[in-house]
Length: 419
Image (cartoon, rainbow, N blue to C red; front, top):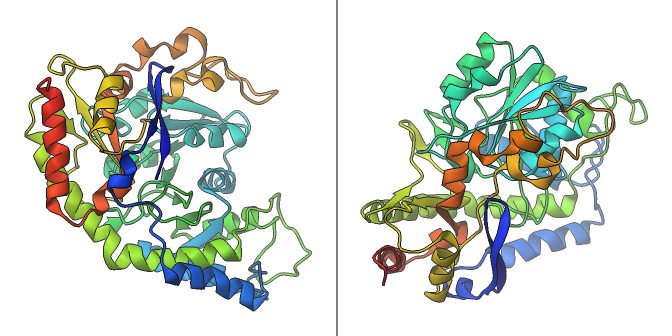
């Protein structure tokens, strides 16, 4: 599979090159006859949308809600159009809105922050831990003001945040918690799947995700009243059991389609049967190999981590040891036939935030970003991690031969040794 990789440092494009290395490793997504049959079954049925809870048109959406909720150990699942909308719908259902502040990890895809902007609230960016690359829970209380209404911890690569401490802080300050689980399908921490610690958890099924239908999203929760609000917001303000053309609150059409749900059901079976186990086993082996290389440190697991979604496999290199820059590190990996993914640029430095290009009528002046407040010096850990880290894509972890992992470690060791 041919792809374009762009390597950035400090928000500036350093290198963009065609990457043919992925041809040497498993492709993503993994599609088989079951997936084609699932999509064809929707066409054959003639029911291209789900309908309503009381009157089903198609059955795949409703079946997927039950199957994914069971997989995640959650009471309720509401499917939506994508992972960005999942965060927006969750925040709206929790009453987050005009001028409210929401604390978000600074190291994530733009959607974690833009979804906050999308509900007329103000994201506040939290620097990350140098070990897990996740939100630094020790900094959260310093960011809380009388305007703070919620926290959005992001489980980068499916690696759990310290949800016990985050929830302690949230309860003490009466804050809602929306776990961004876009990378976390299959992640378990201290006996629970991620998404079950906060008020709700949001998932993405975008094309590159561990569970994918090209697009799509879902929201998990265990509270009956909140689940009703989430559903209502996602389906035009309707209520389950009420007349189809009655609308009880502001909502929009965030419904998932039957094609995506049918494909997700087929993909979920593969995730449960072999992909999640293989990803975790290979990630543990690769982590052990890479951590033995002088100057290389992999993303750390918190004590109590039982399973990781492994959407990506990130590691950092010590610039005092490495003879090459980040851009050359990527180039050498690609030259050696090893696929890579670019790391997310920290949110504080993105142009939309640095230049305060938000929504009309919203006061962003008290945010901890924009202008000089977006300088990297104010976010030292995430800046260092981004400038000195590399990510492998999830499909690299689906190899069947341990020698492939050993080859990756050998190449990384060679790069660090200047070979």
